[in-house]
Structures are given as structure tokens and as C-alpha cells.
Amino acid sequence: MKQTLQLKVSQHLTLTPQLQQSIKLLQMSTQDLSTELERYLLENPLLERADSDGPAEHEQQAAAASDTPADSSSSEEAPREREREEMDLSDWGSGGGGSGSRDDDDEFDPILNTPCRPTLREHLAAQIGERPLSRRDSALLTLLIDELDEDGYLTTPLDEFAASLPLELDIDTDELEYLRKLLLQFEPVGLGSRDLAEFLQLQLAALPATAPSRELALTLVREHLALLGNRDYVRLKKLLAVGEAELRAAHQLIATLRPRPTSGFDQGDTHYVVPDIHVIRRNGRWIAQLNRGALPKLQVNQLYAGMLQQRDSSHNLGGQLQEARWLVKNIQQRFDTILKVSEAIVDRQQAFFEHGEVAMRPLILRDIADELGLHESTISRVTTQKYLLCSRGLFELKYFFGNALETDSGGECSATAIKAHIRQIIDAEDSKKPLSDSAIADRLTAQGIQVARRTVAKYREAMQIPPVNLRKAL
Image 1 (tube, rainbow, N blue to C red):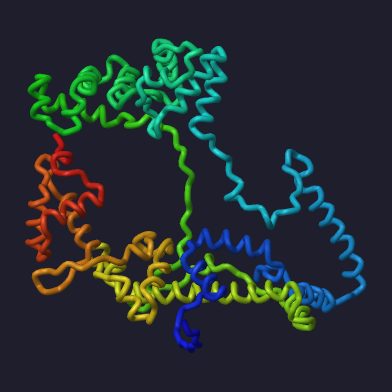
Image 2: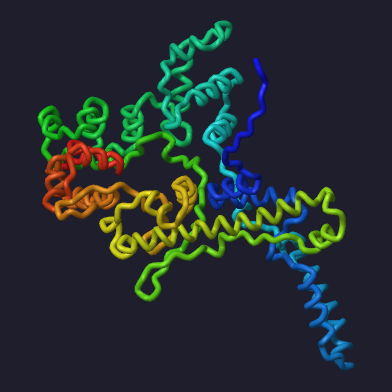
């Protein structure tokens, strides 16, 4: 086989380190970006915060001090007054029940200085320690707590749970049932209930015997909870031989009870969302502007950069200098891109900011990409986990995108607007005779919006609105 040399020319895309960093920063949320920048500040000595006191500020303070008139009286009183201020500051908080002086006031973050709430299992473990239990009972009770689901129910049969434990412990179901009933008395009450019916019975039994509709409510949750869940009020009135007013009173009493044993114990942490864009009204139009509070203030340390330029470019910090410059540039480019995309979205959705969801226009990623000359993937990265704050609330940028459906007039209506119309129709319906999905579709058709029954059902489920039989009330 004869060997030959061939010259071939081709094009391919190469992601440079700077481009990779730009894409990574663009798809981050504001909170993730803040965390990433903290890492860069710790690792790269050539990066610094722009709002920190630099040498120029110290020079201005020294110059201002040198320009102060130095007459004899002020020069004698200034040291005394300075000593008095220093003495007052040093004594601050040292007595009278004070908390002492702080040297790191600038680094103190009150949001981070919040108490750590115990988890549910830690809360229950503390209650086990407060009771006079043997080591065996405490260990078994801890295992039962670990077997609870996220709602606080014990759905595992006790015989299966006993079989999963070592045989040498000789554990029977009666012992486990005793410990389960003990767990029911823990705070929050009802942990370890078998199902919803048992948990509701526990809450009703804790009410005074003279409470109105208590006995009827107990009968409902004990024997007819499925019929009550399906809102089959006609059959319930026949089975219980009660009137509509009595059944309504019992139903209202059950509605005041907790649906889950863990609902009284808040385990979730509060997550704060920082908006990237503010939408304000100016000269009769809604405009988008960057949230200045979310902009990171970073800069390259000019003192170190000047020292590196005077030396050999192959210095070890030369790569970190280039990385710092890329980072500052990419951050600026990130927020410029977010602002451009937000301006295009706000310009197309003026009716939404004026009238609400019912006026939302159909919009897809390609529309914004073609207008700005960007790729659809870039628009997708920009609109993910980026938030916009306006007079109607806080919205993710992706919220303003939706497919279009044709109307009788030849126009288009967005999916968000159709959902708003469906919600308005359901809110205005008679609770005793709720509308079916077909009836809602007919109402939309009367408004000029052609929507099939299946589409109405899909949008209704997406908004977590129950079907017609579960919306019926007494």
C-alpha cells in the first residue's frame, strides 16, 4: 500500500477558556454567581472588591487632614478630644450588660447570624431523652422514627418492621405497637399514624366532647372518609340520615384539622431570590433596568498588575492576572446580555405589565434570538434562574415565554393568557354546580378562543385546580 501526504482544510469550533468561563457565568443564578465570585476572590490575589478602601482614598484622607487650619487652640484641643473619643469607643459594650467590642463589624452579616432550627428527628430525639425509657425502648423508638415517611406517617406494617430486625432481639408486634402509641403523643402530635383517617380521629378526639359536630365528624373520618374525599354529599346524607346543614358543619370542622402530622413542624429553610431586573414605568412605557444591588463590584488590583507588567511576563502570577481580567470582562458581558434580553422581553410584553396575565402575548425563544442576533441556547441560559421584579410581582424570565393558539379573529393567544382565562372562569363559577372541562371550553369559545376539552384539562391540572367533582361544595 502506497503512502501519500494530503492537505485538508476544515473548520471546527473551539471553546477557549475565556468562552467556557463566559458560558459558565451566564447560566448561573445570582446566588450561585455570588458564591463563585467569593471563590475567585480567595484564590486569585489580583482580584479585589471595587468598594474597598484603596490607596487613593487613604491619600485623599491624608491630604484633607494636612489642609486643616493648624491654629494653636485647635492643635491643643484635637489630641485631647481624640483621646476622649478613643476612650469612649474602647469602653463601648464593656460594661452595663453590653456585648463587648467588635473588630469585624464590616464582616458581620445579620442574615447569616440566624439560629439553626433542629430537624424533625433531632426534635424527636430530644423528647426521647426527656422520658424515662430503657435503652431498648429508646433504641426501638428511634428506629420507628427513622421509618416515618416525609409526612410523618408510619406506613410500614409492624410485622414487616419486626422481621427486618435481628432475631436475637426477640421483638414482637405488641411491643412495637406500644411504642408507636407512645410516639403518637410526641410533639407534633400524631406522628406515627397509620393513615389520614387515624390522624384525623386523633385530632377530633382531642377536642372537647361538647364541641359542635364532633361526633358526626368522627363518624365521617372513621367510616366514610373516601366518600367525603369524593364529595359524594348525596350518598353521605342518605347513609348518615342527616341534613345538609349538619353535614356542612361537620365538613367545616374536618377542614380545620391538619392534613399531615409534620405540617405543624416547619423544616424548610427560607430561600431568598434576588431579582436581576427591575421593571419601572417611565414616560408611559415599561422599561427594564439592572438591579444595581445585584451587580458584583470587582476589579483588578492595579498595584499588583503594574508590578507584573514591569517584570517578566512569564511570572507565576501572569496567568492569574489574565484570569482576573477575563472574569471582570465576562461579568460585565453577562449583565449586558441579561439586560438586552430583558429589554426585548419587556418591549414585547407591555400589555402584561399593564393589564396582567390575560394580556400576555405569545413568545418563543427564537423571536428574541432573531431580534438580538443571538443563539436560542444563549437566550435559554439567560432566562433560566434569572428573575424580574415589577409591580405585579417577581417572575422568572422564562415565565414570559409561551406557545400561541389561534383565535376566531385570526389573532393569537398565549398559553399563559388562556390559563388566566380558565382561572377567572373557575373563580366565578357556582361552587354548588361547578363547570366541567367541556363547559369551560365552551366559555372560552364564546370569548373567541378555540380550545379543546383536553387542552383545558391539561392547563387546569398544570395550575393544580381539582376536577369538577372535587370542586363541588355544599
